[in-house]
Image 1 (tube, rainbow, N blue to C red):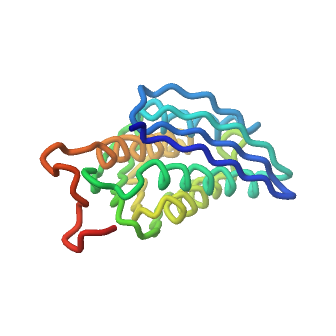
Image 2 (spheres, rainbow, N blue to C red):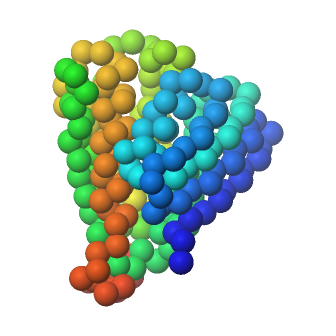
Image 3 (spheres, rainbow, N blue to C red):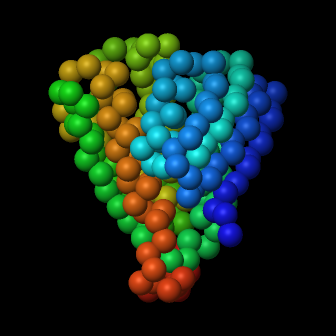
Length: 193
């Protein structure tokens, strides 16, 4: 059975469609109208081996980024189902030139985002810098996962943001994998997530 989901969100401020296939090969088509945001979202697909299609329009960047995060998080949560057999917890450190980021996740069924990503400029290309933090917190909440994301070091804000999204992708890839040793069991001593 394919671990996939399609989420559509239409408000008075945005229109977002997300199609996600967890067990993909990293293909993506992403169009939000914000080039840097599209670039970062593409990293999730490419390095997480998740097939991802996102089409989004909105009246301002804050609403757009937030609603894409809502839809992507909900798609991930729906595609994971009861999370039976998944590895569940994973972490990744990813460098990009002088920048280094760490992401640790737990597909716990509880949404929590703890983000430490200081940027020195108000915008990274055409993306407001604070939207990186806001996207990650909203994604964690809607995906019902615990997410710790931290930029360890770096000088260039583009490099810091991209290494952060690549680390998220790598951690998601591992955490979402089905571990055959679990024999389809829920990865929790409670028996549910």
